[in-house]
Length: 293
Length: 110
Image (cartoon, rainbow over all chains, first blue to last red):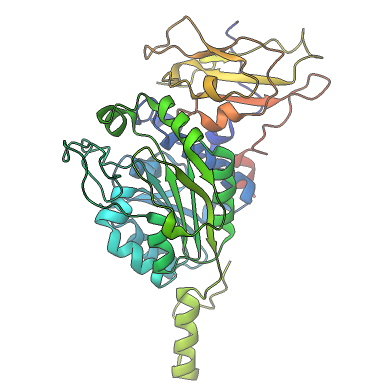
């Protein structure tokens, strides 16, 4: 194999979306987060959205680093506050496509309250949650998504807390689009992300991803590739499945697919409608003439 | 680590094998962290770990069977380190568009 001093004619599609000077990134070998970034970049390409109006907001954590690596208007916010920050962006400038890209600890533990209320109010946000069952950046502590009996640094004898079932949580809080895939399902992920970008309303995508350095090592699950093979073998595609039955046990089957895709008026529509009805001519529309994109 | 052009390794010579080659694999050797996703999930199974080390001390992949690559770019979708991707070639051996479509730069300009 010869090494050619040649820049390829068709560049890597992801290259236009990442800040190359920051690569190599901090994610461990075998981590699935980089794979989800590939899928996200392909979904953005295929969506034909104006990239100047796409905003990515992340919180803190391994997945929170995504905002720092993406060559888009991206914000790295405080822990758990990605959704409130994104809500502010969306309400102040409804023309933006606001994507929240964060981890399970950030979105449903520290930011759990923001998560359910954004879903309840149907904020037009696209929430991508990379769930690796642990707090990766801080040393592998138990999270609200750690499966029962799994070992973490704060549950050395096995987790005994009932974990969140994220699709069920999102659906019951009022999300209009709920899907779950794993980092193994790259084509499906790209497709689901594309659907989210087109969807109006609170859209939630859970991506099950491996954490070979902490969760995988403590539970003796092998390296990142072994976790990917587990996702491949144990995933059950079930579109429209009852989210109540989509919980994940330790190394158990993972129900994946698109679970919810409904229409519901979004926050800004309802606000404009209510205020226009009550105030009539006095209401000029504080966010302009909101035309959902 | 910079992306010097000479770090790019091209999987095959286009000119001499033009008629049989369906895909070209590009590997940025020094970005690779050796996770093995591309090798494990390549549909035709044409990638293997190379013997050489890269600057980070990992074994990057190499294309073992240049004619087997279909240019499906699944390696590019899996690679968590943005180090590998593939493009399809046209029948006459010219380089085609990458499966992701046109590049983001084109979209940005519009």
